[in-house]
Image (cartoon, rainbow, N blue to C red):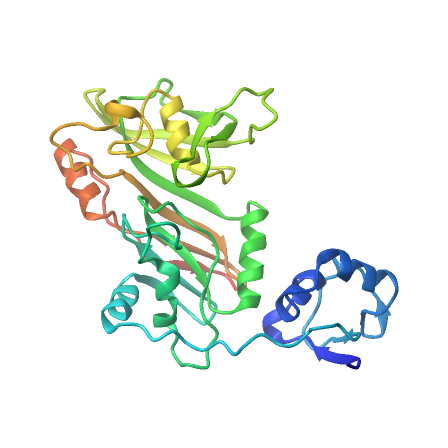
Length: 327
């Protein structure tokens, strides 16, 4: 083993040193990395650095001998059935050199789990333009029963930038929902901590007391766009935090569960005459584009929600095309 000098690529601009090492040496722990930085064994451009140091293209990174630091096996594309390739390509709403955005159908899981044999993650190789291209990466997730916008990064460096934008709340997410009843007031902010109850696939999130040590801070803004005789309402929802099932539990906490919710709301959420699927749709993303400027994307409603909108007399209007500003 000997010292290795790595060069930061264009794709890795502004990435933190610890994330850079996590990518190139995934078995190296954070504690070991920090020790190597403290003792000056890891250097950037010949200078001592901290784990949080941000890297720029062309910089040299000194890597000391690291046991078992072999590179991971080559990223060989999964051989997908042509039907799955057509299916994942049919979901593409927008793509460029940095990002791909899907309009995910309701009922399709984003990642695998107990009893899940088909999911978006297993289909991502179908989006490689060439076998040597990096495998697209999921940047965030939405529930299996939720339809709508799902963001992918074409490269690891873009994934790191976008993940940081999500953590920094620089991404505005807007959901549409049909709920049973009409909230009072008709617009506001839900500030209700959530806690997990149970384990595994049967776990649910519940409203928690503010003094509950297991409670997670959770906030959502909402507004009624239209209502039908106070029996049903069309809401816009914007999560200010990203807790599991946050929007579903927050709507339930208002006394207006989301129509067709299989996990929350009880019998009230299931109404005869309507398709019994979750009526929650990730409608819009307004986000910083990794190459500069901002990108705004809007996803068409899924078939079951379009049918419900027609039945209730809700008029969504035309779906705007993707818009990129600046950059």
